[in-house]
Image 1 (cartoon, rainbow, N blue to C red):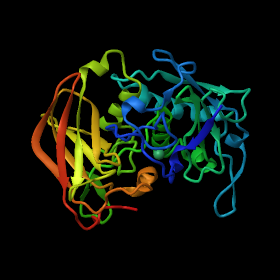
Image 2 (image 1 turned 90 degrees about the horizontal axis):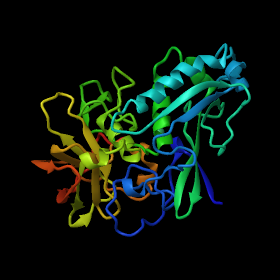
Image 3 (image 1 turned 135 degrees about the vertical axis):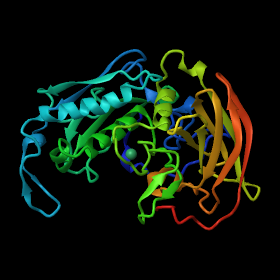
Image 4 (image 1 turned 180 degrees about the horizontal axis):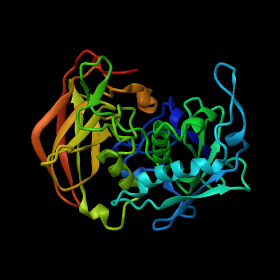
Length: 364
Ligand SMILES: [Zn+2]
C-alpha cells in the first residue's frame, strides 16, 4: 500500500503536471495526485473507517517523557522541564479543537480524551491522532498527516501534532501556541494554506493588516487581538471538507478565468468579498490553477465583489510557488457585484490583470 507522510508546515517543492483542465480552487490536499492542491470535489478527506461523517474523532495526549524532562535550548543551555505533568497541555488542545468544531456549517466532531498513559509517543499511521513532544520541530509544531491510497484516491488515516519543548513550555502563557495548534489541526482537516488578504500598511513599517479583516487563520497573514478568531475563509474551507448535513445545497459559487496579456495567470489569489451591512464582511479566497481558472465555492447566497492579485506571502505557498505563479501582475477588483444563488455556480467571470512590477508587499 502506498503511503505518504506530510509535514504540512514544510510542504513545498514538488513540480508535477496538473490533471486535465478541471476548474479548481486550490486550497485542499489533492486526493488524485501527489501534491497539487485541489478543488472541493478532489480534496483529500478522512477515511471513513477512521472518521466517518457524524462520528467523533478522539485525540489523545501521549504520556511522552518529553513533557516533563529537562531540555536543551538553541544556545545549548539545559532548561527546566516544559510541564509538571502532560495533563497541563490538555485544555489548550481542547480549546484548539473546539475552534473548528464550533463551526455550525461543518460536521467537525472531535475532542481530546486526555493523557493516554499507555502511549509514550505518536505512532504514525495508527489511526489514533496524538499530541506528542518533538524536540526537532523547528517552528514549534507541525501537522504530521498520514495518507493512504484507497482505490484511486488518497485518504487521511491519521494525524499527529507535536509541540517542541520550547512551545510546550510556553503553551500556558502565550496564546500564540494555542493559535498554532488550531492552525495545525486545520491542516489535519485537509486545509492547505489560505491566501492572505491584500495588505494595508498602517504606517508602522512592515506592520501590515489584511484589507478584508482578520486574515484567515490558515494563512501566513497578520493577526491581531483575538487569536482564536477563525475568518470566514477558514469556516468555508472546513465546511467544504466536512459539510454539515444539507449545507452544500444552501451555498453557491463563482467561477471564471484570470489572464494577463492574453495568457493564463497561474496561481494568483482571488477573493470573493461579501457585501453586507456588517463591518467584518469577510472574504472567501481561492487560487487560479495553471490555466488561470478559479472556483470560489461554499459562498452564502448574496452579492460579492471580487478581488484578484498575486500571492503576497510567497513562502506560505511553496507548492504553488514551485510551479511558477504570476507575481508580476497588478491587483484588480471587480466593483460590479456578482450574484451567488444557492446550489449554483455563477460562471464565466473574466478577470484581466495588467503586468506590473512585483508589489513591495510581496514577502518571499
Ligand atoms: Zn501551516
